[in-house]
Amino acid sequence: MDFIVWLASYVLPFLAVLTVIIFVHEMGHYLVARFNGIAIKTFSIGFGKELLGFTDKHGTRWKISMIPLGGYVQFLGDMNVASVPDPKAIAQFSSEEAPRLFANKSVWARISVVIAGPLANVIFTFLILYALLLGYGKYTIPAIIDNVAPNGVAQMAGIEPKDEIISIDGYDVRSFSDIQKLVSTSPDRPIEIVLKRELELKTIILTPVSTQVTDRFGNSNRIGRIGISRTTNPDDVTLFKPNMFEAVGMTVEEITFIIDRTAAFLGDFFVGRGDLEQLGGPIKIAKVSGEVATLGILALINLAALLSLNIGIFNLLPIPMLDGGHLLYYIIEAIRKKPLSMRIQEAGYKIGLFLVLSLMIFTVFNDLT
Image 1 (cartoon, one colour):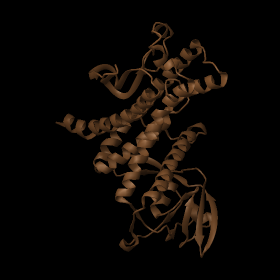
Image 2: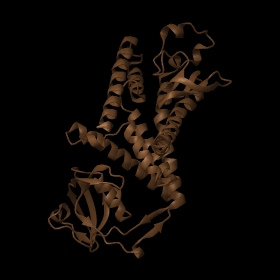
Image 3: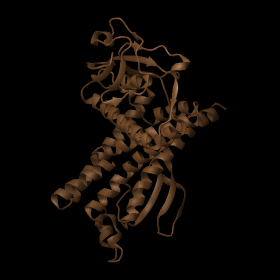
Image 4: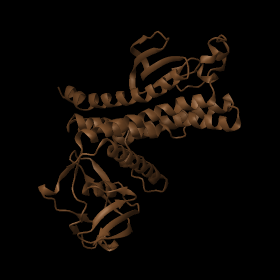
């Protein structure tokens, strides 16, 4: 019984979210490849042994595989699922089939196919956040400070009660919750605050203090705090429903914010500020998916949008095996006017495979500990 509860609470929401994100990503590759007239051998959700599938009229094998932690689109003439070209196989194709091979397409066509996966993730995130904003709006509370903690970061920087926060790091502040979001995601990183005091705008730069907090599910998180608060009355809360044009701008701003904070999070590890407890792998994502599922379907959809964007960003890292690694190879090819040698490409893919597997093992170990 406990196993069934665990399966329904954690594994199923995780697989549902991950499957949708993988499908969107791989469909981006697939559609642009088809647009460029590229022959596609396999479209797989998951890796390893095929569990079920079918072959369409174009000769593409659509399948669901045993290990559901990823997926791939394999083109005709590829050596493996990482889209490494197979020179021996390519040489054996007829003159009619050869123009349809991915390896024989122009470098710009190949670049468009590679970019299409991460771009599909970004578009998917945009559509979800945009639809939620149009459909449900956003509850807002005036971004006016009531209390400033004595000797806190805010007070020492000159922030006073009744100050109205206008923007933080260039992001518009429409609600007090925006202050919390922008400050909490910047622990130990300087931020620029523009505030209004008696009709006069002031700019203040301060650094939120890193603080460990525990969420409702018992998870420990590192956030930034500056020592301000607001007492909220029911009359202070209003529902803001943007029109379709305002919603576009707000959604783009939200996506820009997520990308910015994700890059800052990764950058922290290069300067020694990174917190390994915040780095999650498949187990942590499954746990979070299960926890979010208890909050309702809308919360789970929102999580899918955020994970989709992060997976799209991760795939653009310049590591062979990932889309960013392929993109790096093709950009070099476009500059040199000829591709890198197969020896260099294969060496790069081996290094990339080692890095990706090492990261996966590390994150799983980190989740367990």
